[in-house]
Length: 489
Ligand code: B12
Image (cartoon, rainbow, N blue to C red; front, top):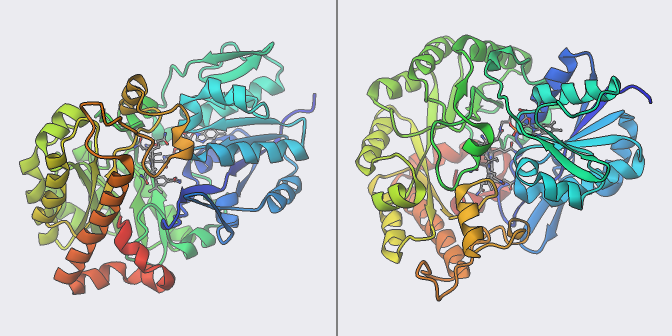
C-alpha cells in the first residue's frame, strides 16, 4: 500500500440560522492538528470551505449555509492530491455539511481514508460510522497526538487495537477505543499552523468569536482547555475534561508571533474561561502590558475582583462576555448547576464599567423546569445589572450535555432534532407535562423580541458608547447593521 505522506484537512461549509452574523473564525482545531502533523514530518494542507466560499450563501428552510459549491470543492480537493483526509465537525449542526464533504472527497479519491474529529462525532461515533460509509475513522477528543498515531499505524501496517481514542470498523463491526489520556502539557504542542491558511481573508472578514472587534486586524488564541465546572447545558466538560492551561510565557510567545507575522492589533481569547488560574492570568496580563494590543474574552464571573479587572484594563481589555444565564438563583442552582451567586454579578459589571470595559451578557431562558415568572425575571435582571448588550438564548439540548440526555429520557427531543430543529433547539415539552410553560414557537419569538428590546434600550440610553462599540463592524459590514440588535455578542 502507498505510504501516507500528504494529509489534507478540511473545514466544511458552515450552517447557521437565517439572518445570523456569518462568523468566520480560523479553524483552530485543524491548525493545531496540522502543527502536530508537520512536526512529525507529514506534509499538510488546509482547505477551509467556509472561508474560501464565504461569499457563496445558500438557504435551506430556516438555515443559511456558507462555503464552496460542490463543484468548486471537488476541484479544490482534486488539486490537493491527498493521501489521507481529515474533516472537522465542531458543532452538531455541522453534520450534514461534514457528510457532504466526505462524499465529495470519496467521489474524487475513492481509496483515500477519511477521518473526522470534533465534538459532534465524538458523541455520535457509532451513529456516524453507521450513516456515513465514506468515513473510516473518528478521533475521540483531542486530535494532535491521536491522528499522528493513527497515520503512523496505517503506514506501518499495524492494527489499531491499542491506539488510544479512535473509532473504526473491523470486519463490519464498529470498534471504539475510548480516549483515556488527555494532553496535560499543552505547552508541548506546536503553535497552530497559521501559515497553512490565508490569514488575510479571515482578518479582512473580521468576524471571529466576537464579531464586534475594536481593532482592524484580529486573531484568536486559546490559552486553556477544559473547565472546572459542569453546567447542565454544556458539552465542554464531558469532552475536554478538567481544566488545563498553558503557561503565561507560552501564550505570550504565540501572541508575539501573530503580532509579528500578521500585524495583529487585537487578540480574542477563544477560551471557555480565561481566568481560572488567577496567578497565571495575572502573569500573562503583566506581560501583555508591554504590547500595543487590545483584547476581549469570555470569562467566568466567579473570582473577578477589582485587582483582576484593573489588570485586565491595563493590559488592553476592552470587552468581557459574561454568562449569568439567569435572573433566578433557583434556576442557576437547581436546574443549570452553575456555582454563581446572583449578588456577585452587578458589582462585576460596575467594576468593568469603572475601567471602561464593556460587558456583554449571555442568558438562557426556557430552561426545562423554569417558571414563566423566572423567565421574565431574567429580562428585568439584564437591565438591572446594566449590561451593555445581551443575548437571550433559548435553552438548547446540545448533544454531549446533561440536558440533552435528560431531554431524551423525557422524550422532549428527537434523536436528530439538532439537525432539523435548531433555532428552538429541539426541545418540545408537551402541554401536559408539569414543566410546560409555553410552546417552543412562542419561546423563540420571545427571546428574539427581548434580545432586540434590550439592545435598543441600551442604545437609546448610551448612544455614544453604542456607536463606539459597533464602529469597526459597521465599517466592514455596513449593510448588516440590523444584525447588531438581534443577536448582540
Ligand atoms: C469558540 C467557540 C465558538 C465560536 C467559534 C466556533 C468555531 N467555528 O471555531 C463561535 C462564537 C462562532 C461559536 C458559535 C456557536 N457555538 Co460554540 N464553542 C466555541 C468553544 C468555546 C471553543 C471551540 C474551539 O475553538 N475549541 C478549540 C479547538 C482547538 O478545538 P476543536 O476545534 O474542537 O479541535 C480539537 C478537537 O475537537 C479535535 N478535532 C476537531 N476536529 C478534528 C478533525 C480531525 C480530523 C481530528 C483528527 C481531530 C479533530 O482535535 C482538535 C485539537 O485538539 C466550544 C467549547 C469548547 N471548549 O470546545 C463551543 C461549542 C463548540 N459551541 C457550541 C455551540 C452550541 C455554539 C452555538 C450553537 C451557540 C449559539 N447558540 O449560537 C454557535 C453555533 C455556530 C454554528 N456554526 O452553528 C457547543 C457545541 C455543542 C454541540 N454538540 O453542537 C460547544 C461545545 C459549547 C457548549 N455549550 O457545549 N462557538
